[in-house]
Structure formats: C-alpha cells, structure tokens
Length: 333
Image 1 (cartoon, rainbow, N blue to C red):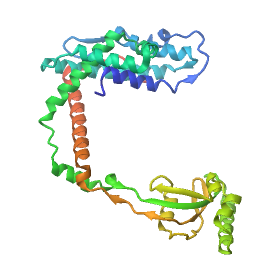
Image 2 (cartoon, helix red, strand yellow):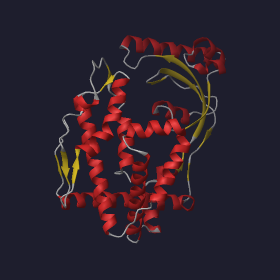
Image 3 (cartoon, rainbow, N blue to C red):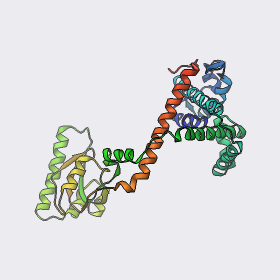
Image 4 (tube, rainbow, N blue to C red):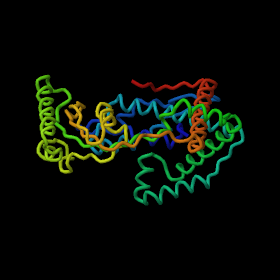
C-alpha cells in the first residue's frame, strides 16, 4: 500500500535528487537532522513515534548525498522528514487496525520477498540498498510482512463492498470513449524550416516566406524529396522528408490536424509548430477506431475496483488519524 514503510523509503530516495551540488564543508547528516525532537508524533493509545524511529531512516540517505557533494537545504530535509513521518504514522495506524481485526503476519513471506530483492540486486547491491534505507535485512523482512498483511486485510475487508458491476463498467466506457480508442495512424512527409518558438516577428515572417517559396518550387515541378535534401532542418531529409507512419497524438495538434486532412500527395500550406514552419505532403491515413466494450470490459472492472479500493484506503486512513488525534511535532517549511 502507498503508506507502507517501503513505499515511503522509495519515495524519499527518489526525492533526494534535486538537491544542489555544493561544498559541504564537513556538514553531516546529524547536523541537518538535529531539528527532529525526541518525540516526533503521538498517534493514540499512548503510542509515539520517536527520533530513533525516524532519524535512522533518513540519515544514511542524507549522508550519502553529502558524500557525493550534494547539499540539501534545511527546508528540503524538513520536507522529507515530514513526508516520512506521515507515511510511518499511516502505516502503523492501518497495521494496528488490521491486527486488531485478526490479520496475521507471515514473516516467512516477508523473508521470501527479501530473498527476491537480494537475488534481483545482487549481494552488494542489496546491502547498499538496505544500508541507504537505514534498516537491516531482518527489519526489512518484517516491514514487508506487515505490508502484505495490511494489503490482504484491506482487500478482504472491502471485497464484499466493491459494488463494481457491468452497468458501472458500461457507463464508464460510454463516458470515456477516448480512453478506448485506437488512434488514427497517418503517413506524411514534411519539410522543416526550424525556428525558435520565441523568435521575433520578422524572423517568423521570413521563415514562412521561405517555406512558401518551397511550395512554389514544388508547383513548378521540383521534387519534394529534392527540396527535403537541400533545405529541410529535420533528420528526415535523408529519407525525402518521410516521417513514416505516426499514431495520432504524438506531434503538435496544428501539424496533425493538417496531416490528417490531406489527400495522398497533396501539398499543404505552411503550418507552424513549436519547432518552426513546416510544409507537408499527404500520405495514407488509417482512421482510429473504438475498441468494443467486450474487449475492454475486464480491464475497466479492474480499474474501477482498484480506484474504489484506493479511495476506501484513503477514507480509512483519514478516519484512523482523526480517531487517534494524531499530533506531529515536526512541521514542513
């Protein structure tokens, strides 16, 4: 689940990258984490989250950044700490609820997941990974077992209430047709006069006139491929300007709407995109088509169930936090 310890750590690792490269001047992780109080949060029933729960998870990653010359700001570190604290509280609250409702921990399953990670990453890679996460292999196995238990309990407790039926899937299909449509595929060639998107008006006009001149040459019998080889600023010039078959939705709308409207061999008027001015030669067009409901029914049902399950998880976490009167003593900047 999204609030699990493992997910929190992965999100944290991904968020560390934007820190600025700078002289660290002997700065340590302990210096950057000294704002974390002994008691970080209260979350009901006399249970607390302490600095000893949080700092070991943050310090290895912050220290690794410093060792690589990346200096996170105090504001960044505080933001990461608050995010981690929130995730840890959510995980503990839901785990507590699951255990009270009869869920059990399968520590052997957690160990199997650890073994799979060790095999995937290799011994050195795995050791580096858990070192950065600030956990031992045994602690990771328990965390993963907790996550599995919570996920199973949530799935079992909400399965009977999902209420996702064929009519609901059909309604979703009917109201989101674009999500189930194969895009049109068009084959077009072009000449490009490259131009900055913020080019001044005189450069824009000059480039358009140049492309209009190419069109005039084609009207006089000059081959499109010859002009592409001589003038086009697109790598497709080596193939006569041919872009090959393209699915609709890949290129700018102004380009695509014109390409889709051209007859085979028809030369367009100049058209501008963020890349510059283009001259198009039409090719074949295979229209898009709507996939039949029967082909996508199961995928829609799965998506609706997953969406509803995640919404229920969010509602559960909000309720548990309210009932626990959660108090966090670290704030984001």
